[in-house]
Length: 627
Image (cartoon, one colour):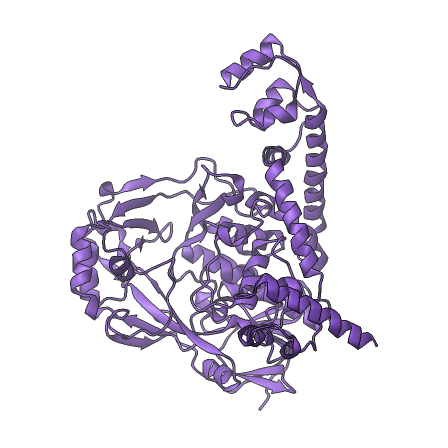
């Protein structure tokens, strides 16, 4: 029976990182939105690492921010340490990472949700989708209450048939201590979705007062932390250190002797785990020659005694976990406040999705986050934003929101998922992005703010500022390409002091800036601009000039990529009649239904010869259709 008194445009199921971004995006775009969560006190929870960002993940967070999402702002409001990774390498792979007060992160996100116009926040467990003509029209919760809606975003994280494993113990849970979502998982299976099983895990939490931190190497926050959000002007919290130590041969031997008691190696877990983020048991088995592995201790909050023991994630019984932990130097007396555990959960094969993250089976149903086979808060948040925007676009009868691989890391991730699928937890890496020199952290707002503004998620002042930076950058680059420095005594003395060669003839400032020993700040001392430029402009000028050759090469590669993307594949194109394609490729093409020849080219197993066959087939189909 329908007791609902309000019809919604968008319902979001799950208030993790994906769900929060989805709900905020649709509400801010003007859609009446409902966000359902099993537990109102666990909104935007950080059940694993108390951190945001990292390699490639930092780029995702910056892009969420540039498009008008919330993650970066909440990160800055709860950060207790900032570090920039890969600073010894080029700017293409610089990535920001924070430690965060996890309780503060959750509380601050909840406060934003509660104050957002067009957004209702309710505690309920989704049980069943209501359908009409293969289109979602509503949702029934576990009490039988029915909600009416035009679109739904499912962002359930690890909750679909979630099963926590600690040794031989099995506990139905979406996370330790929280209900699993059984009814919705069964409903999706009944509807015919291709469902698989994945596994992830989390390390133990230790009591700070029982740790000898003097036995660990201290890692402090950067002295001048750079905020995650382009709009953040103040970092409010004290910065706390992290600590690095190592396991040892004794630790490894304890694990080897007790592998049969591990849920992972004892045969209790069937779900696929991630190769790139192995549990501690996995490390011991897969890297038998290693004498030690890193253990990183991080505070979970400013006022919390809980310490996150990164590197010690496992699914061993608690009594063995104690032996493992206390074998590490500095942890001899450590008390475990929360045990490590593994968790299995259902996911939907992302090949079931269109590029908008809408299911192909049911109209108006979007999936985001770990339900799509991904891992990580950042990957989830980015998908949530994408799905929430597209749900709103569906309601408002706008074209889908799509970014391609040349525009954003988010575009790379979504294209990977819907074109190649995944049979293990998907994580973003810089190596996945072909055009990463153009998709840097530092220019995310310059790349994407116009798109965010068009969607109504980025304000006009922000867009105006980005345009100012872009215009100022081009103007200053042109000045450096024209301005000539003469070989005066002062100039040459300065160059020698910087450890670079003197000049004997007039040299353009552009050429000097390309020297490894010099940066833009150096050039200002030799020949300052006629008017001061913003710090962001200085940064952009230096990167664009120093990496000009590489950037031009990537721009040429993007042009070729775009040419293939422009060749659309008709919706009713029959792959079975494309002579010359293998049956395997025909099956994949019929499953994925690529929008363009470019997307088809990225399907696993696709060859240049097969692309040529498709091109001929599409041309013949179009000629026949027009006659």
